[in-house]
Length: 235
Image (cartoon, rainbow, N blue to C red; front, side, top):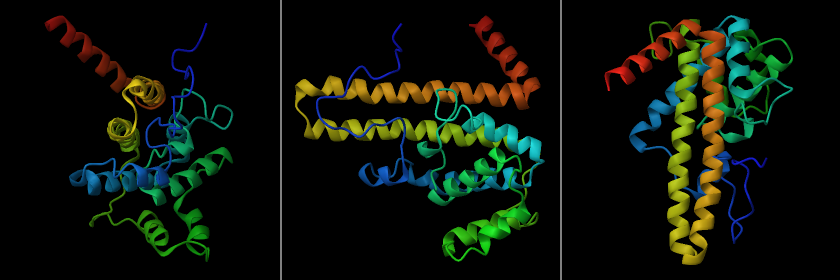
């Protein structure tokens, strides 16, 4: 049986594949797929998740990373978000998350002490070094407190949802460009190609959220299911 989410064929013209924002350099051709009034909140949320992952118990960090990106044996499939998919809007945030994933693969999740090696690396850019300092030395009385490890799954879900929504903004912006540049006969094929990529993002988001729920917060999952059933009965 054919896979309904797999592209049936390329669109009539060479269009960059789009699942959500597939890479950070893709943003240059799309504009900023984040509402400007949400930009600061988006970056703060991502930094908060990275801080939580670095400071959480190793087993909690590993569980969240595997739920998000898959383990080393199932990376790039349909049940996790590829590292190339720009889960983090901030490029430096994506770089740090890549280090965390590598450390989980190696069996030693990145902790604050391990960040020192990246801080002292002469190749580390100043902006990235500042980010690492914020993650390694949060201030409980300042703007960068350490999130409790119980919040890690909720922070991870919020970051996934941000990635998911950026995908829809990017799809609409890409299609708006197609409308101005392509023939009417080609529009349906472009829309189908873009939609298939976003459907793949939908499938990955569902799998990731289920993994976060099942592995980390089963009680909350049961509560959410009960609330959904209650709402359905009231309709």
